[in-house]
Amino acid sequence: MTALQLQREGFRQAMSWLHTWAGLVLGWLLFAIFLTGTLSFFKNEFNLWMQPEMHGLPAPGADVAQKSLDALVRQAPHVTQWIMHLPDERDPAVNLLWRDQANGRFETLRMNPQTGEPVDARKTMGGEFFYRFHFELRTAQKGRWALQGRWVVGVATMLMFVALVTGVVTHRRIFKDFFTFHPAKGGQRAWMDAHNVTGVLVLPFYLMITFSGLMIFHTLYLPAGIATAYKTERGVDSNAYFADLQGEKADSRVRRGASDKLAPLPPMALAPILAQASARWDGGRIGSVQARRDAQGRAVVEVARHDGDRLQYRPPRLLFDATTGQWLDHADATGPAATTYGVLYGLHMARFAGPGLRWALFGFGLLGSLMIATGMVLWSVKRSAKSQTQASRKGAAASAGTAPQPPFGERLVAAINIATLAGLPLACGVYLASNRLIPLHVEGRADMELAWFFSAWGLTLLWALGCAVVRPSRTGWSVPLGAAGLVWALLPVVNALTTHTHLGVTLPAGEWVWASMDLAFLATGLLLGWLSWRLRPGRAPKGKPAAAKAQRKTPAAALPAASDVSVSTSGA
Image 1: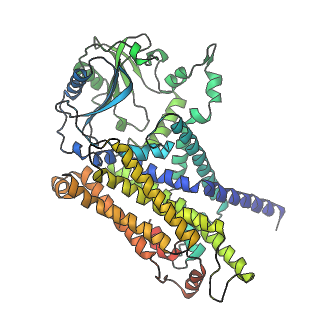
Image 2: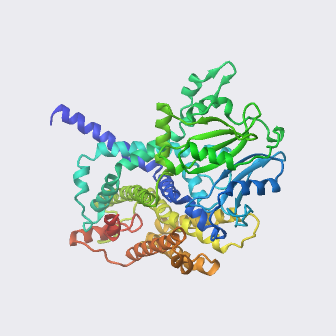
């Protein structure tokens, strides 16, 4: 072997080490981040399903904004700032955030688009929980914990990006192996094939989603450049940086300070303002309207175009005088750097995507979750086989044909694999079920839903520790997967027993936003139930005799049999 070949092999081995440990150190967290991020593609639909009181709202009229504003002023006459998101095909309600002189924090209202009156909907975080957990590990708290969560997610995302790049370098035949799948062989070969298939199939999506996720919070991870470029005599002018990034003038931003020092907003007519905005955008959709006071204390109305009208995130905005309705200025990020950032942000959020593309991105996200899951199981497979070989050579087996007990560390990894890969789907299903089972007017209802989620996840961890660490058994995988399948499959039934938004109503009416949720829940339950059945204790794995023999030697605690789940990975 030449020196150049040795150098190449040494580099590849180094990349292999980096790929393995970059994926392992925070692999379980990455799975949770990726899965909840995938669910966030349908955040609005989860919000609707978890607030069935939104069902049956009438179509909005031309004066929906004015009616909602009038209703808000009747409720809070001293309002100092409000942000109104108009209804669209994914959300039939008017969503209003507002604050007044007496309350410096934003309050939330969901309003009837015809009458402008508030809708009495149940308290829940809805799909917002998946969205917040995805990028800041947030439960029901804000502030410091959310900031720390963003740092943790940022480190995990960076490690995933490193694992993706090093994975391409490490696997010399990655594209060739992609077309060579051996599900019947079992063991390492089947898991490696599954990992390669899920890793290569939509590799550009993984690279885009991880890199754009890092770019979104670049101000948190890389503040030095901003501090250098926007340094003033009084310190770093971060407001000017964000104004440039969003394509607006620094003096047009909302005035900082306590809300009780701001004067209430004057009465305003929104119809002529919205008509001007629509004309300037050649009939483009209006996504949101907000009223506030700028840096000079002048009341202004900002009209933003709908997020779905273009790929670049942060849509163009128009500023109007709140009293006279006169057009003042426009704001849009058009510079090369700001546009690049906006496009990356838009690709990550995918708010531009229609139903078909959103389902495609959802499928890509599931493949990413499978890629991480197969990588974690593959690590257990390799270590278990290696430990078993070493122990057999030393005569560690108590008798012929008895598999040696894996080391404690490997059993602990296997337990966390079970708790994460099987426990998180169970916890998500329990979270959705709690939305229907918890009484509507219980104090702290949204927090109780989160308590159900984390309790289900915690119980799965205890179960996994008992099965994988104390007494290894294939039951460790089959029971939580079976429980998850049962919960998800029963969600449409529980929905039918507790609300009027069930399939018997939504399917005949052609309300696919509602019906598709129940159908997706049922399909998820069937898939998880099938996996549980395939992994049931005592089931003999299929495949060639050599593969079956190798499978019998594999410790049951470490992993599910590769041949048992090969159909699901190949189908993905």
